Image 1 (cartoon, rainbow, N blue to C red):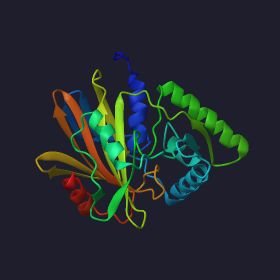
Image 2 (image 1 turned 180 degrees about the vertical axis):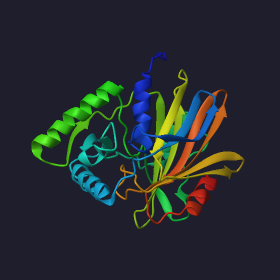
Image 3 (image 1 turned 30 degrees about the vertical axis):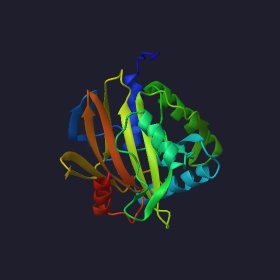
Image 4 (image 1 turned 120 degrees about the vertical axis):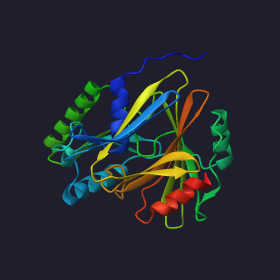
Length: 282
């Protein structure tokens, strides 16, 4: 029996802030807004939150230390003093994913959710399936705004008492949000990565997702086989080791149910043209 649940708007806002940028709140410029079925999605750039090379290097080192201490399947939240002056929420999520590397069983799981664009064996000829997970690939933060601020203060105090530029703690990686995310991971021989995401809102929910990104982000609308697609490229992405991320996403609707498809990469070698080619393969 399906349970109806009431979801906190604040919890959803926290999730989306951490998905694309981690920064809030400054002057904003609306990039787009689109509604399909039970989902409204929009994106805005934020002024005055671009990070310096020194800040990015500090974040990279902290991420490396934490990542080396996480076991497969574990998640963490990290406080970074480098973000303290540009963010009202200077914490980021991290995840050491537990991948299902059996493509057939992963496809079966997706079919159970009635998805009709299943992950292929390969993408771009040289990227092979490495595994699937029912999570956003860079982790998420979940909770009310007050919960997140309290967590940030707790970790900031730990950073100050230790004299380090960061502090962190493990968190429960089980999500109760009505945004279901299924990520298929592909890698080539150089371990460059492609992420194919399918995201869907729980059938009994109707929500609005607001993505925030620095003003330096590249944004472009594309026509993808009749679908309006959006291309983003962020070279100050604090959730990846390369600190770069680009993606192409598009929405579909069937019987009032919206689905978001995304193909993205954190590889410095990936080009926009390659992402478009991968998207067309799907």
